[in-house]
Length: 141
Image 1 (cartoon, rainbow, N blue to C red):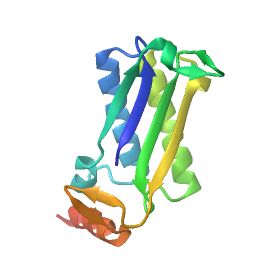
Image 2: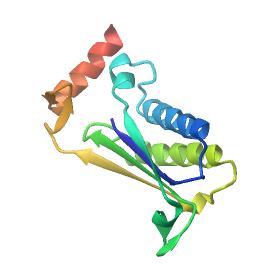
Image 3: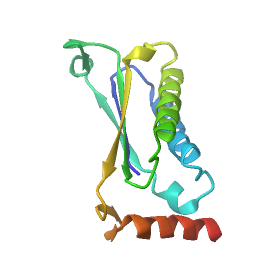
Image 4: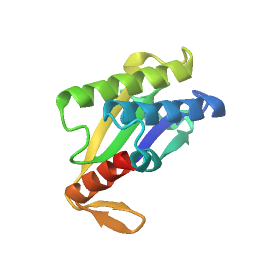
């Protein structure tokens, strides 16, 4: 489940970037109730985009800001409560990693869902039912 974290240069040290990404991974697994699931843990992936300061904008001006995007299959974090919980946890993670260099109101998050059958892992396309089966299979193993 790809996570993309975008921040300006200087906001997070390399160590803080790693800490933030680990925290975002933990947040999605925790909210989904899949902390111990080997299949899901191995498939929470992503990137950290560090952009020049002048390329991270809010209200048309450079600002210390962070953008968190989580891509999931339609079956994951489907409830409003789960979405709110992830966004709150993700915001907390980035705010803590930035150690006061960012205002909470400058952390934006969004969750994007892949359509049915459009989730691919290792070259295999998964339907929602197939993906749920793989997740459940890992829980039993």
